[in-house]
Length: 221
Length: 170
Image 1 (tube, each protein chain N blue to C red):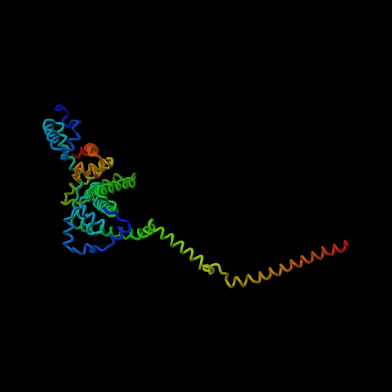
Image 2: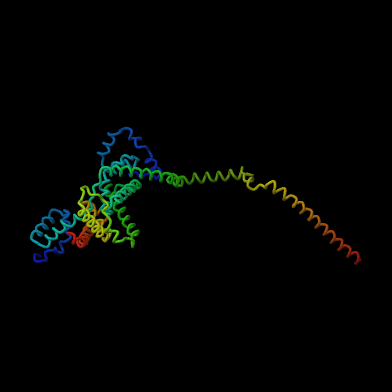
């Protein structure tokens, strides 16, 4: 795929949405056309400056990106910020995407890295500052789709914190493998591609993560 | 193996049981493990435990439609801002791309040559002497001339003294 110089890349993204090729197919027709294009085709268009193509990529991947981020952050606002940051990074580095892996793998690798960076930053910031009493007063930040009874709400909050604490204790690779498998249901192969490691290694990370969480969560079962 | 503790699975199969729980085993190993688990209390209990515990660790969130509308709007603004903030910087750095360096060097040499050729007095404004300063300095300069003349007189006196001494000696 053609690599663009920084200034060229900039210029193309500064063009109005309906310029050049976009003008030929307008409005709904164009949207429908993009909706039927494959990721790689959209990436190629976005690399040529088609902002609509990038927006279609966002539309396709935002929910999954958000849910992965939510798995790491367990907070709605933070998950939103993290997944948006991943899209911004993808936008900035799209010119470097060479198609060796699929866009899906490349992009979710960015999401995971953004989330791990966030966790590292959060760990540094909060080290020694986090008060157990404050933690016990915190409510789970996400709103469940169905309203919970007060006691269920408390239990859900406790469980969420317990799981979060247990996940925090896991090494980053184990946590990543577990979240991608348990929350997202990705295959071992997909996780290996995203983590740029061997499938066997992912299986080991996953097994260790499950063993550690099993010990931490056993009392809640 | 069947005589093992009910809550402890067969150690060598534990990792595969995790994969079986997640449905990530190929057909052959899956059938084999299922058949084993049916006869092994420890492995069977382990699978049940996984099925109870692991869903608890799923962080689920289902934001409403408005959330996604805000999400899109916010992200679009962030991308716009990123493009804007990058643009001036990239335009600036683009000027220093290797391809433009010879042009810059040529332009610099031409400007330097023109300055040397036609630039006489170009900077005189900066170094020019103020009228007032000049009027103050001139009398001092005149006085200097006077004192230099006096020095000559001193020298004449000296010559006379030397000359007188020589006459006396004669």
